[in-house]
Image (tube, rainbow, N blue to C red; front, side, top):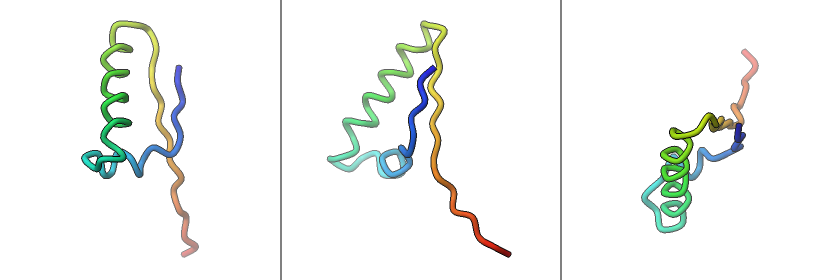
Length: 51
């Protein structure tokens, strides 16, 4: 199991020159992990507001 934290800035804008290599590696990794018994878990911080 791989836990990847705070990737939302990269995934939100995947076509920028800076983010494209990271997104490509994630796609490659997911294809590789489909053949194994491993998984990726991505997390992000969610802002909470008081109501």
